[in-house]
Image 1: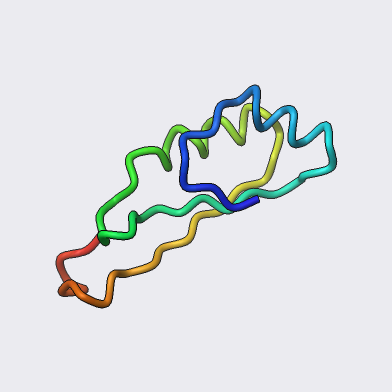
Image 2: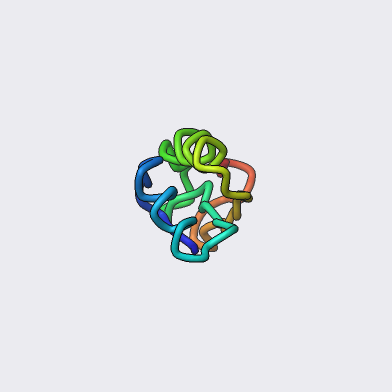
Length: 68
């Protein structure tokens, strides 16, 4: 699963019970800023027993040194 929204523990438990075992959480927004949901979703994934990782995509239109 790849999600940019704030995903609840209950949703992740539901996904796990339906065969999901891994989530990828974007750590940046389309504007190149830090996604404030990432920390909570990582904690929620851990609480649900699902492995998680993050992805970072820089915005090409912005100075990379000012992102993340």
